[in-house]
Amino acid sequence: MPPSTSIWSPLRQPAFRGLWICGAIFFIGAGMQTMAAAWLMVELTGSSFLAALVQTAVFLPMFLLALPAGVLADTTDRRRLISGALIAQVGASVLLAGLVLAGWGGPTSVLFLVFVCGCCTAMLTPAWNSSVVDPVPRAEWPQAITAIGIAYNAARAIGPTLAGLLFARLGAGWVFVVSVFTTVVMWESIRRWPPRAHPPSSLPPERLWGGMLSGLRFAWHSRLILAQLVRVMAFSAAGSALWALLPVIAQRQLGTGAEGFGLLMGCLGTGAVASGLVIGRLRARFALDHIVAVSCVVFAAVMLLAAWVRVPLIVYIAMAFGGAAWMATMSTFNTATQASAPPWVRSRAVALHILSALGAFAIGSAFWGAVSDIAGLTGALVAAGVLMAAGLLLARPFPLRVGADHEVTQGTPWDELFVEAEPNPEAGPVAVEVGYRIRPGADQAFLDTIARMKAPRRRDGATFWRIYKDLGEPSRYVERFIVTSWADYLHQRARATVADRAIETEVRAFLADGESARMSHYIAER
Image (cartoon, rainbow, N blue to C red; front, side):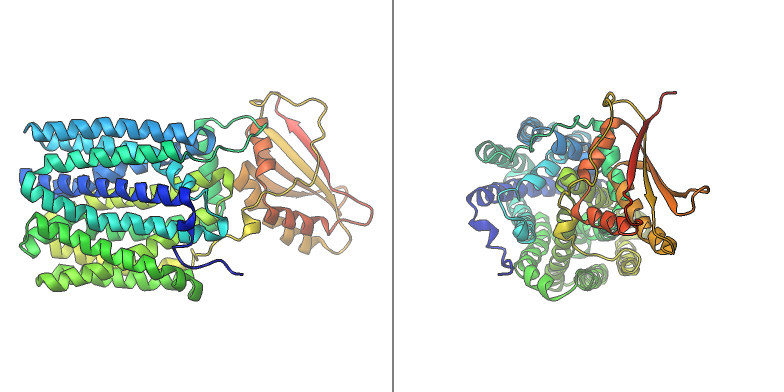
């Protein structure tokens, strides 16, 4: 039977359900903290730039720390990583709440402590995102990721709305106190349902810098992942204008206070939740590019409407459609990224998705805030809407699809590793040559087929790849690639997928009768 498209299917797993509920509570607290900080900045300074800078303080750490955090999540104990980040966030949130309640919280201290909380969230997010789906079968990952997106966007509806009510009655300090308790709830969930341990490996462990380079190399040479990262970056950079300028829309365009701003956020979140309930069925019927294209057009229209319309009810309704479009697009990108990455790099793929989406969001928020101060709110929103629509042109060079099982499942190496004595793991560079003596008349077909090996070799660790023809024996070709160290070569061998092995099978089908591919290894001595 085909997997269910219902988001309720993964929620039948007790561990996923518990992590999902506690994650939703944490998201609510984060949304409350962001809303209160943004509105407090408006009250303290009256500057739309500084109000938008709160979004930058929340999401810029993702740009700075997501990839190192992804490497740590792929190579270390995820439970300790998540717990440590949450404990640090509790400390920063307690300090923020104390300063504001005491009346000592100025713009600088608020932005700094919000930034610290953002750093903590950035450190835990790749590990949490990659581990929360562990209890769920892979076939149900799209539904699980959508359920997480619903929780996140429901929190964006509930959190700001609650924060607006609490802010109006008790002030920002008590909003920050609530966020402390929601962080503690998240920590308790990790203690009760810890992430699954990484499978044991005899390979040398990756180091932080090398792990970052391998993650970037993988994304650059994987057409699936690269397309998703480019598209999410363009969408997030343009769409950040609406989110960043919501306080200004509420205050100047609609003439509402903190409660009105919270309601705008709530409408965006409500639309996102509604979209999440049906997105599984839409993905089963329509191509990913069609869903993203329609969502981009809808979100661009919402920004244009917010730029000119001053009737609150119309703007609130439009925000619900904007939230639905945002959820449909971002959950599609997130699902495609996670499902297209093999296990060894999945946290790093999540980190790069976060880096692309929220890094662009953070920089875009600051940019659109500055544009609003210079060209006015209407000008900024119109420009963002036009850019959002122009992003549809990326669909042709960067098409979207989800990786198949054989593209993410580890394959068995073709050849045994015959070396007289294994070198030190750090020794290198290592040159690997594979010789092929092919049957007559198959040269062009052989070259076309083996050219498809370049991307997998480079993606999994090679810094150089080329195919050579033997001038002394025209039927003989040599594939040559270079890897930085012996440890990196061992990792590269282990990373090849079933799809990669299928290409190698096609390549070896061109061998002359009685011939076999001959592999040689060389290590740099000088």
